Every structure is written in C-alpha cells, then in structure tokens.
Length: 147
Image 1: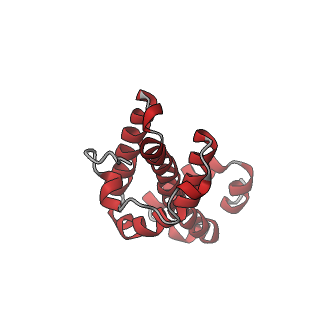
Image 2: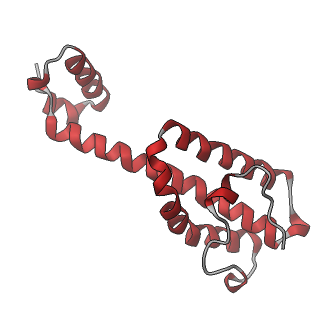
C-alpha cells in the first residue's frame, strides 16, 4: 500500500478521502501533515480569490451600467444581481472574510476597469482611479449607480 504522501501526488481525490477517514478515526499520526497544511492554506486563498473574481465582474458591470446608460441590458442587470448574491453568499458562509472585503475591492478594481474598457470601448481615464463604490453599495440590491 502506498503512503499517504505518495497518494497525494498520484491520486489527489483518494488522498482527500483517505485523510477524511484518518481524521474521523483519530489516526493523526498517519496524517500527511505537510500537504494537509498546504491544502488548508490553499483553500483559504481560493475563497479570497473567489471574492475578488466576483467583485471584478460586479464592479465592471456597475461601471458599464453607470458610464454607458444608453446600452444597459437585462444581461448586465442579471450579472450584477448574480454577483451580489454570490459575494453575499461567500461572506455568509465564511464571515471571517468580511474584513478582507475592502482590500478585495481595491485588488479587483483595476481588472474591473480593464474589463469595462474592453467591453464598452470607452477610454480608461473616464473611470475613477479608485473604486467609486463602497462595500455597502456593492452589496446593496437597491444601489444602481447613475452618471
């Protein structure tokens, strides 16, 4: 039988199943501690990246909504609603991410502007240098920016 460390490199899903079993049975001495720690840290990064990714789309669509009102579509509205729902869901499932939201907005904003520029063909200087939306505005279903 291969060691749990070897299993990590050969069959990741089997490695996960094996570790769930080991932990359930209290067999902590058999746990591949190094890889388990790496995976737990990676899971935290993925959750933060998920929020940044959702904010990229949300902010880009809000910018398009605000700066090209004549081209508003149901698709833009749907995307804004969906991203708000998903960000709120992530924060509800992992409340410890709430303090990360402000820095996630700062991180997401340049990419959101890039998306908005590409999709609207407006010049980048039209958009504010910093995100014009607070975290409350971003998550508020009633907030629809106007120019």
